[in-house]
Image (cartoon, rainbow, N blue to C red):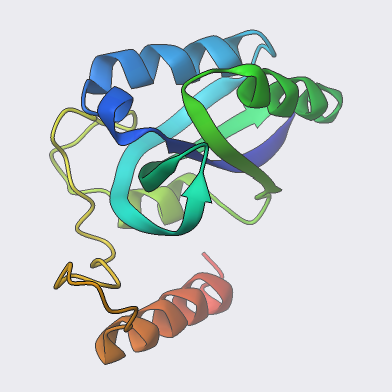
Length: 155
């Protein structure tokens, strides 16, 4: 079995009910007999362009294990879902349980509760929520350092 990372983009009105989102993700991945190791509501953001008439979307990050030949089916099921706006699957063999634990608060289980949880790992790029398209300066440096930590750590 290979390790994968998948980013779901959901309609924010649907994503307001974390339990329904969890069920939808489990349904999509369950059809491919995938084993979910980490699920977290990442953030709600203003989109760069409209997707299916929506200007905002809520991201969910999931790490899972699955046979490589099942990925096409997962992508197809996600695209056919009426609640998933976009999906991106990436192979993540370098992700170990130790790496996942670094991003989790110590009191939370591997599959976190998505109701009302906000990711403390990454601040919103446009946290002032006005009409400009600026990026906060500090956010760019956080992403670069997070990538550097993930790549250089040889646990």
